[in-house]
Image (cartoon, rainbow over all chains, first blue to last red; front, side, top):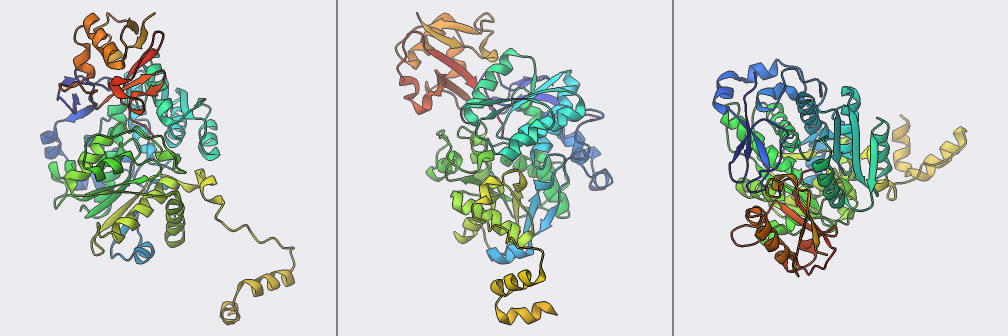
Length: 420
Length: 91
């Protein structure tokens, strides 16, 4: 049974039917899915959710979910890793990594939003799915379209990492690279979406797409034993996930599944593309677009559609926002890899770097629970870290050569211990 | 030759379904006013009560966001292309 009432404008409250619409024609505000929360509260329990398969559809009452969603049977329910070694490195007591770098099937949080968007696209009868993307979304749309047997067009900036480009091409979409940045791609796609009757997951299916991001927040609370963390740090690009994580926590409280103070939410951006951080620090609601210049390409969106809602969610929660440089981003990637064995992309390095900064600034206290949101996988963006890493030692297959190398690499005091 | 204005779907009910219309003016703001003269109701969809471009509306002149130019004061000339585009999510 669906609890979806229809769509509602976030700005002016105008109501619309459950259809592939995304913009309020009164005020251009974004449309959101509206639910019958009272009915959900009566029918949903922790036990019912816990008994379901470990995928994002376990929260189907709080999603625009078709009767039998065919897309995303293995998406979501990624690990919440207790990160004790990273906690020690950052000097904090209780730290977790919500690890969507291993989301199925394309290793980013986008598998959540795309599962929900394409399930609805199929319901609406679309034969072609499409998106504008900085890479991860294109990967996910391409893979899910292949599995669902849909035609697929993806649009990307022409300077993406090879891993992101090949990580779409393998699924056989038509890929169009636009000379320009993501904001140029988005502008073109908006015009294409107006002309071609396709399911653009991030345009005409936006209300459905964005709801999928809530599952990231639902899972954090469920995996903590149905409680909220005190602090959550989330990367910001277009601004989809952060407000939806806030909404997820609010909904869990509203339907009676989790109680306790709502978490403080923090936005992480790269210094080379930080329009939301800048607006927060200036104390304004007006987000000035920027031309992105950062290695964190997956979050290089200079004109964030939902930036305003990021500001709102951060402020309402009592959180904050910070940005870090490309060097700090790479350091963040390495720190997470070397303390927790998790290899994230630059967006994740940004989140780790910003968490470190927020702790050092005293914005996040050291003795309260913290969740770091890792939303993408480092194996797709090798270019970002390659330069700083040591090349392999090359030797012949002779023990004496290894002995010599080992002697060179290891101080004498360590040698005996290592041999026994 | 006037400025060519691309009309997004939510505004086409004002333009009789037209995807592109012509409008005149020396600045982007003047073009918006001329749109309103021709198609009553369009301006309040694009601009708020204070006359500023609404938060979720992007206007591009020949592909450039007018916020990188001079906003509504940006000068336009005949033959320019103006696009009105709703903000869209993504990543």
